[in-house]
Length: 236
Image 1 (cartoon, helix red, strand yellow):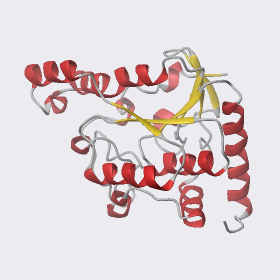
Image 2 (spheres, helix red, strand yellow):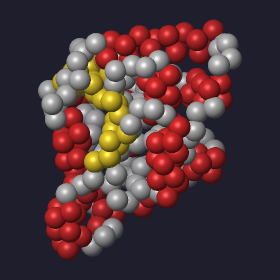
Image 3 (tube, one colour):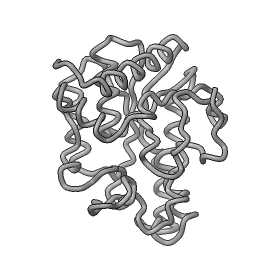
C-alpha cells in the first residue's frame, strides 16, 4: 500500500477508529450493497482482521455487474459475505397485485417493494446483532448531509456506525486506487450510486451522486427504508 496524502491518511485513520469502535460493540456486521464505499470498508475490515461480519441483500433485481462483483469479492477476501434474499411469497404477492414493475406507479408502491426486497431481509440479517456498519456518506444526498459517525438506530434498536460519513469522492477513489480495491464496473459507465437494475440509471455531469436512484422521485423521498430520515436521526 502506498503512502496516502495527508487528507486521505486522516480520513483512513478516522474510519479505522470508528470500525474498531464498532468491533468492540459486540456482534456487529457491515451491510454491503457492493457500492464503492462498501468495497472500501470490506477491504479495511479484511486487511486489518477486524471482528466485523459482512452481509448483503440480494433483492433479485440487481445488475449483472453487481453479481459479478459479489463473486469477485468472495474470491478476493477472506471475510465471508452472508446473502439474504426476500421472502418468495411476499414477492409473488406484490407482483400479482401490482405487476413486476409496479414501483414506478407511485412512492408508496416503490417503498412497499423496497420493504419486501430490502427492509424485511435486513431485519433478519440484523437479528441478534448489537450494531451495524454502513458505507453512507454526507456527500451522498440532502437526506444524509448531517450524518454522524455513530448514531442510534431506533428502528432496529442498535448502534449504527458510518465510518465514511465525512469522506469525499476523492478520498474514496484514492483509497480504491492505492489498494487496488475491486469495484462495480457500472461506475465507469456513469452509475454513481447503484441499487436494483430497474431503479438505477447513470447520471450526467453536474448531477447529484444519487440522482440516478429512483430518478422519477423528488430528492427528499430517495430512501428505501433501510436508513431513517434525517429528521429522525439521533447521534449516539
